[in-house]
Length: 279
Image (cartoon, rainbow, N blue to C red; front, side, top):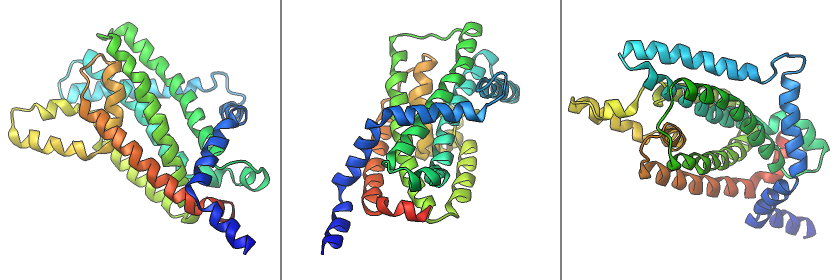
């Protein structure tokens, strides 16, 4: 009876929430581990994580220049748009791809170190935040070359990034537990995310198609509204470019945040104790 009671108690929302709170309380651990991940990845490298900055900047210039010529767009307008789109997409992509592998990759720590599962998720989010900060150097350089009409509304990029980080946490929890149980999910998730890159307005300007004089093109462009990545990118990119804010993007992101966390907590409540056996 005692064993059955303990098993029943482990499958409660309070235990799942307690894991998140307890994991966040171990900030010194996951902050240190996240920083060590970056140092270890670029060990013996002269430029270290700035190689990611260089790669992002090079890709942005290449793709921005190419698409500006193909669509006959002003480089001063299109390149900042593409640059920010790539920087934000790199964060989203890493949260999903690395999030799906977050528990399998930390198999040793999970089995040997009795810490809350959420510690590994916070570690992932913190590491990606640091890499995002490195990539923002490209954005700062771009501002010196092509200044943007920034104002007080640009500060909305801060809560927008916080929302993105919060969503990255539930995505890592949910996909991480699912991928621990079903290993075939990792390549499937990777393929879907790669496809979504081309369906998301990162290098092509969604608003231009929406305002097209051709009704058929404008109607098809509205299909992009069903792409959740569009809304996450726009709530950060628009204020950082000094563009007008669209309330619907914020509303959709908030709805996804609530639904995502409810789903993640539900799965966590049921299967949190099994992750150590699955990995």
